[in-house]
Image 1: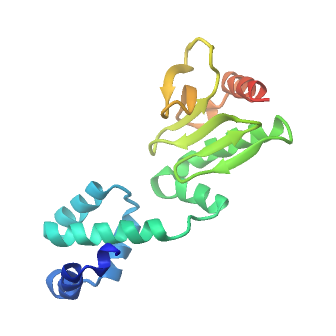
Image 2 (image 1 turned 180 degrees about the vertical axis):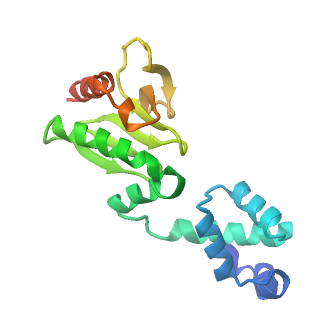
Image 3 (image 1 turned 30 degrees about the vertical axis):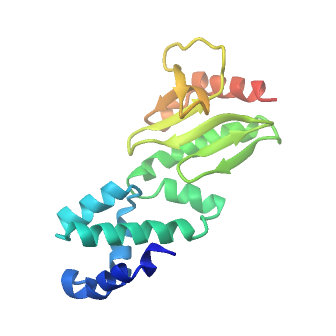
Length: 190
C-alpha cells in the first residue's frame, strides 16, 4: 500500500489546505521548484520557510519523494539539461568542452547521462563528468596505477567509480594537461 493510501495520511491530506493554505499539488510545485532531493532538506524548507508543522512537512515530503521516484526518468539530453539548470548553468561550457574532446577521440565513445553526472565510456567507463557545486565541475578519471600529481588527485572517487579526480572551475581549466589525462583514460578503456 502506498503511503498516500493510509487512512491517517488521507485525513492529513484532507486537512492540508485548511491548515497550510495550499493543496498537496501546490506543495509539490514548491518542492519541485526548490530542486531539493533529500528528505531532510525538504523538511527544513517546508518547516522554516513555510511554517509547516513537522507532521505535515513529513507527509508532504514522503509523498512527493514516493511519487517522484515512480515517475519515469527524463531522457538523456533532459538529464544533462537538469544537471546544468539554475545555479550550475555556468558550468555547462566546461561539460560541453570535455564531451566534445572525448567524442573526438573515436567513434566508440558513449556519452551516458545519469541523474547527477555523465559517464563517458568506451568498452568500459573511462571518465565521469559531474557538476559538484555551482562553482566547481569534477572530472573523474579511471587511471589506476597512475600517481596523483598537481591537479590530478587520487583516491576512492565516487565509491570507486573513478581512481582520480580533477577539479575544474572554468572552461579555461580544461587545458592540454586535462585533455591529456582524459585521452589517457580513454586509451586505457579500450
